Amino acid sequence: MGRLFSMFPSGRLGIGLIALRFCLVSILLLHAYRFGPILSWSWTTPVLLLIAAALCLGVATPQACMLSCAAEIGFALTAAGFDATVLILSIPVAIALVLLGPGAYSLDAHIFGRRVIVLPTDNPR
Image (cartoon, helix red, strand yellow):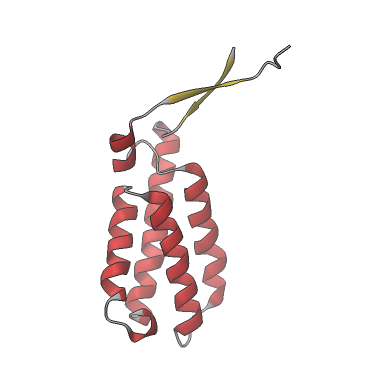
């Protein structure tokens, strides 16, 4: 037959993806609160809040994760006293979230629909 693969996993996996999204949001908002806007630009704070809202709701999750990585790198380059070891935590979490997707409990799942993909396991002859 084949292996079943869900684009937006639910159950325990979906709850785990929610936890990943909220961990990434908490790291991003903690840095925004602690270090303020990136490069002292006043427009970066609303953008960071928009990224955080998108991650919480699960809207455009891959794009929000990439913007979150860019913001973390911006904090590392511009913030005085920034601990760069946090990048070891936040960037891999964002990459994992991009690769796994937002999960069934997200707006992306409602917008694009939950589909089941059947991957063939037999070699064609």
